[in-house]
Image (cartoon, rainbow, N blue to C red; front, side, top):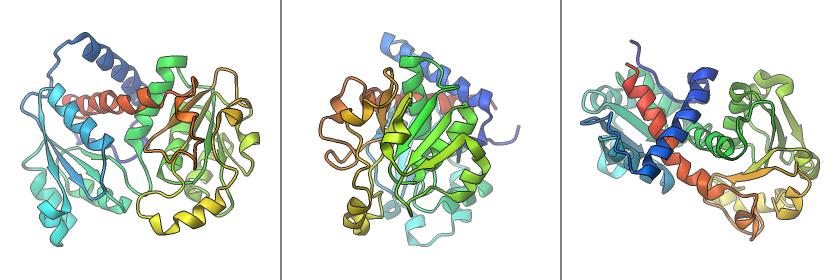
Length: 302
């Protein structure tokens, strides 16, 4: 069977993605009941980090341990990748030693090149263009509280970044409408907007964008690598803060998500994460279980 990779949500079909959400919920229930389940006994995940992380490292490493396997953390300081070894060569070598590779890096081209030369599954744990693993956790978070997201309206507020790009893919795969509220000049990838057609709308007024929304979500205004633009972005995104008052304009059953870490007082008001409509802490914890479902799918479906 051909090796399957997970570089964007589009690497899986709709049925597979919906299955992952349902399976993540099952695995979470097993975890909470203390049920031991170790289908990845003696399997190893190589974790390549060129961008720092809290949630990604802990969730993947803990997930592999809980599934009976292990994980090896690799930073540029510890590997030949940081000393100029071609990605193609690293992929050929690493994939002979581990059962899957997770990569968190800057340029999306790095993960696509690595996958091209890898003989084991490659997982995109974040690039500048996409963050598909986070979307699995987000879809799980909504499903757990409100049921399937199919047919609902989701509002993204803020920068057209990797999370926004992945929400566009999610809108197509999970079948929901997406409103994107962003300032001019901060739109997501045009090719994704073109592919999504009328499923996605770009709006300039957050209040208009959240009207009737069933899910409202956002991210920091300056992502990793954009720190020098932080002040400029704070000015550009004035009026795009998510607050309880803004949430009041959404559907009465609307939920709020944030992939974290959050800058309280910037993209979210100081009290938004603790609002009753916020499920960000469950969302963060779901990274563990959504990724376990993904690892099981990629490594046990061979």
